[in-house]
Length: 370
Image (cartoon, rainbow, N blue to C red; front, side, top):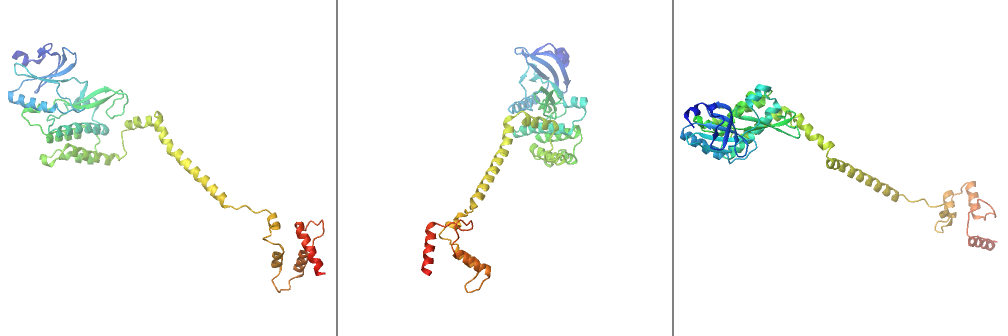
């Protein structure tokens, strides 16, 4: 590659770099090199190919940083697919070509992010920066131009970053390019850049959230949060204090609640099961109570029991009810005693039913007294 072609990146369109990447069009040209839309000549897969001219020391530092970065596997991080040094010492970095737009382009097209969108972006960026920090690395070049909204079709629109037809996933691209400017990437710089972006591009932030983000802008790195995880924890607590512990995006609630009520028969059965068991238990208690009440009640003896039982004689009971021993009593009571001792005439309805043996014994007693 001639020096004239290196100074005029547009003239490289149609050229195949390293015998692998056919440059189809120029996407961008900046201080960090020229960016091309390229195609792999053997697979046909599209790549974003960056061609960088720099000195040997910075090139080596950048390659070492990218190698360490490539060991981190995270859904919100785009790592290089291939790194090559051309014979003229230019560096080629190939990454997957992603459909979508960066944060600057999104803000220009739609305006500032809503509070719900800002929380979703903060959550995803903090997640990937935390993973880099855990691996002993960092992005080092965090800005609105390399926060990329990658769109994909989705079955359910349940994210604040959805547009009704698909969902956007926030990814970080172009990590480590600040090394070309002579900077050393650090997690403290990532934290400061993240706080600055959220504060500038998200509308309707609560005072508590802004207070959390202000700490990320401290000049002394030791005065900032100890880690990205701490930053996220304080940010989430401040956001929950404004929205309430149960507040959630409306679209997310709709997509998670409606299926469980209408389309999941197992979930419906699980909801009905406690009510069925409770009803059965209550019915069982009622049956037990009724049985206990019926068992406690004694049946009333029949009328014949008092007339035929030899253990309960009728005559002494009538005497005790009328008078006590030694008292004169009334004429009515005396008549009752006489009628009780005298035999009842045959065919009388008032006579008590007595066995024949009892009648014979009374007649014999009468003859002896005469």
